Amino acid sequence: MFVRVKQQGNYLVANKRVGSKVRQKTIAYLGEYATLDQAIEGLFDAISTGETKAAELWAEVEKWKQQIPFGACLCPKRDGVPIYVTRSSGNYNHDPARRYWRARREAESYERWARSTKARLEKLRDIKAAV
Image (tube, rainbow, N blue to C red; front, side, top):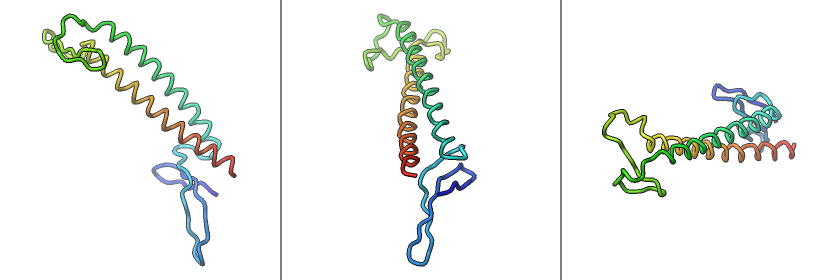
């Protein structure tokens, strides 16, 4: 196996002879990392950073959830939280409900990214164990 450097990132590639021809198969995407060991270490650090960021965002979600004026809203509810939009200020970025949903989407995004990166890390660890 060897590392192929491309513009999009580094790939772990293996050669296999099929008949009289040599075929190459991409084993794993290493991204910005030059070796398999660096990729494992880097992904482990990235996962912990992503999980920390998600935890911070969930704390922010709870903070904004407390600030939503439940009694002032006649809008339908989503997950127990009213969809609330103020009409007085014209600047909807300061609306607690909007900030709640923005932080929640971002936290969920970080959690999805961490799950997929964990799967990628496990694949790289399995490859390293096999080599």
